[in-house]
Image (cartoon, rainbow, N blue to C red):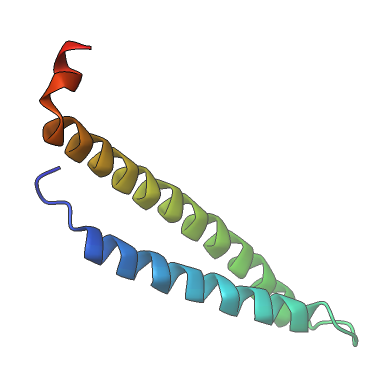
Length: 83
């Protein structure tokens, strides 16, 4: 936990959200007529896998941020050790 850097975590979240927005844009284009080519279908599937990876990373990073803030709260109020 001592290696946690909140600024880096937030920067990473911003990058992942930007990538999700790009995936959404490409998927919207994919779903428009005409019928997509097989290559486009493969790309659509790959984007779905990447979306899952991104969401997993976001959950992990947000969990780390929450854990970091809980630790800070405990250390800033020593009475929490005895409650």
